[in-house]
Image (cartoon, rainbow, N blue to C red; front, top):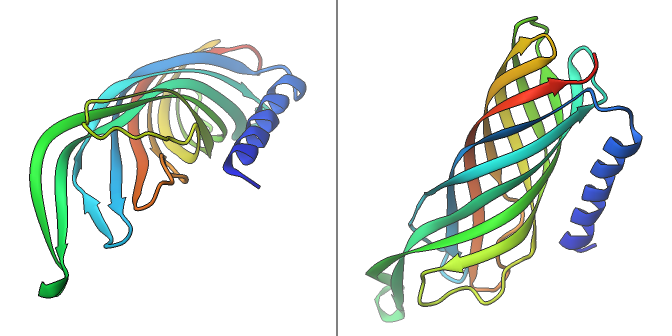
Length: 218
């Protein structure tokens, strides 16, 4: 089964849970900043480029359902900018000198990947009344919306669908039918940006957001 088939099945399962499961117990909006980076690895000689992180924006809509005393199901749909700043490097291997690697540094360039992210997650909250810490964990599907690069050697082919994980923690202040919260998430990818050998590129990202939750029912 291909990555695309798995991601589509995951997305349809998440949407069907929300649409046909039960009336949402809460919904809301969160937004903030992200710190994204990428790993560039050359497979033949197992060499990794050094990259610098990029800051970007994160905006997410979410809906919560199947809410119990501690656990609930939450579906996030958001906009995220990933990528990195890289320095063009000319790497040469001298096989006559014990495979010695020589690296010549060039100019820095920025590559940005804009994604629509869909994350079905389990949400665990502690049973506090006004101030509630919680944890989030679930799989993620990223759909490529746009790619832009300043590099002289831009990628010619990127994976339009990428699988990943999302784990996070937050602290929510409850005001009757309204919740205000701050949330920190870590979003590593399980599948690469490109499968073209010899270069493998993977995304990872941290996000810090503030949000508001409207509680529809308890």
